[in-house]
Image (cartoon, rainbow, N blue to C red):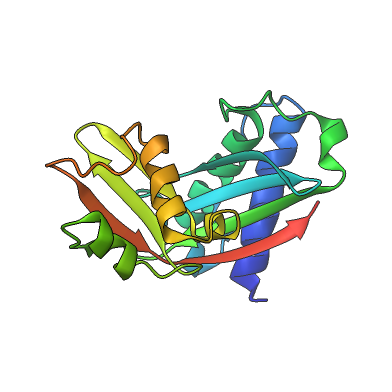
Length: 185
């Protein structure tokens, strides 16, 4: 594990800990961070307890230093995921924190659902769907729960509030890969 990777996990744990203590998000001194973490980066931070999702927040576009992105997403995953109540300190035990750093987005030029299903690489691709103001993504880790490409796409369509099986006129698709690291807190 590289120093940068270890530091990303430390930063994520810091953000989660502050949120669980109901403290304001901490600030990072970026001057002390490894150079690789100062480059703009996009990340998702996922929290799991007993194998179940407990929070997941992320960004699709790299707009701030990766270190800052991970800190903000870790804090938000612990206390701002609308699907869950804020994490509390009792839940830190047995909590698994995963940090997925997103690679560049590659447009998918599929013109039909069947073409999209053929183009997808199960277990490898994260997928973004955009249609008008609607947008959703699934990280590659979602393939573990939805290994069939048709099920994966249908669930993503539902997440984006699109009708499964539909193919809207202004549909835009892109895929990406991630590098994921995790640790138990």
